[in-house]
Image 1 (tube, rainbow, N blue to C red):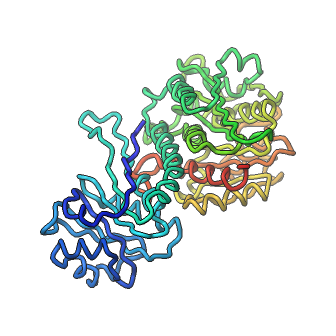
Image 2: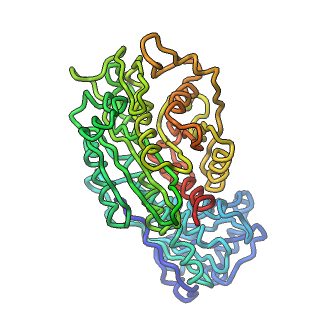
Image 3: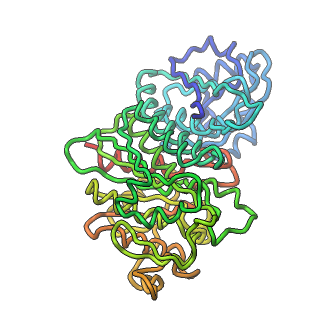
Length: 488
């Protein structure tokens, strides 16, 4: 797994600033007032800081943006970064400021002089998130993680807050690594092994193999992987840190590579289908975060791991499969495979654990990207309360989410002549009919959300907290939801 930045929190040491290497970061409010650390750096750098703060360039900065000064005279540091940040800002604004510092910092380490700022832990958290780089397959990659020193007036207090955030950051990194991995490295077996390895941090992990799934009647899921040499699996992760109450369930689509099957995709862009296990990756990251921070909640995470390949044994358009629930499905398009996987995992989760609520995540439809772009995931739900709680949690963590409509009028698009339903409903309302399909495998008394993360799981350009590629979207929002609504 990609190492997190080495972050140390210590009491402010003004004398150490003269010999600190790399980049030294100052927090400067809009008034331009310099705190003791900034005054010391200004003196060491022959008035450079005060001159920069009085400049038009600093005045034009927005909250959280950074002005970098290179190679200050009289100091060992190779750069000074001035971030415009008021003393009273939201946690998210402080986090974005920390990420901006990480993005602009040069090699050699980063020293952040946060003094008595009330959001110092959030600044460190944002910095940690933005130091991520996926270099596992680069032959000349640097092995050492970034080094960050945070100087504050109350180190014990900041350290305690940051430790909880660091656990979530590790979950985010875990998810990003999984989503970034090429499919020849992250097979269904390797994916399952990485999840099983989390028994070392306290999770209870079990794996269902194909014979067990056949016995359970999971014809919907098993049909998807028939053309692949990689065996289909379901991995069940349990974190029972609460009382005796029933758990909350997270369910993820884990298609480690999606060619589309017999309904094969165009060649252009097919390499991006290594990220089609993004939903399962998020579930794994959330479970890791909960275990590391010892969450006082009962949560189960279930992921269906398959590979969708064309082969002489592969499922065909027109085939009819029987789900664990007992409903029959006419497979019109083998490239609409994610819902077939989720159908059986959702039903198994409810039959086995009787969850108090359930959220599934999937890179399910291209249609959601057309509707919402890469800024928001689509939220579909049978519960106003659960959907509102999740959207609030996502907003608090800076992860975009937008509720989409559902309704029985869309069900007619899924009617089949030969089976109980079709797996696609045509181009119109493609994301909605996919959600309507999934809802058929959710019991009426179970609060449920379907999150279509096709547009947010992996992106082509940098975000506030991640470089291009996997974002880890959803780990922070789901951790916040569990923390706010389901911890004892």
